[in-house]
Length: 84
Image 1 (spheres, rainbow, N blue to C red):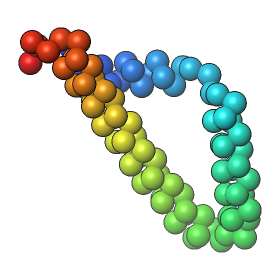
Image 2: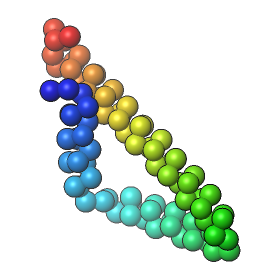
Image 3: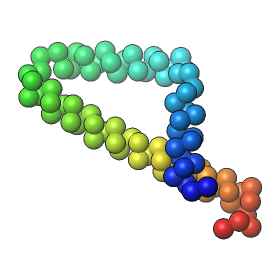
Image 4: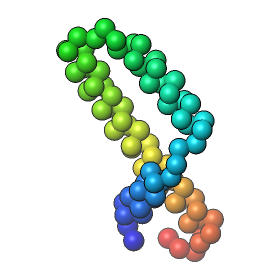
């Protein structure tokens, strides 16, 4: 199984999990602050903000991929040190 396939399986399973209370509270804070920050945005500012948010989402996705690959590598080295 290729690492990319494993990463996708893990991501799918992770996103199926329920959010923790701590996560929900933090998300609520962010949404409230974002609403306050963007309440007077023009259409152009909304477009810029949306594009920025998309790029941040892409970065977050890359971070998750790297964390999964790192975890897989460490797990493989610890559990199956003879497998390369």
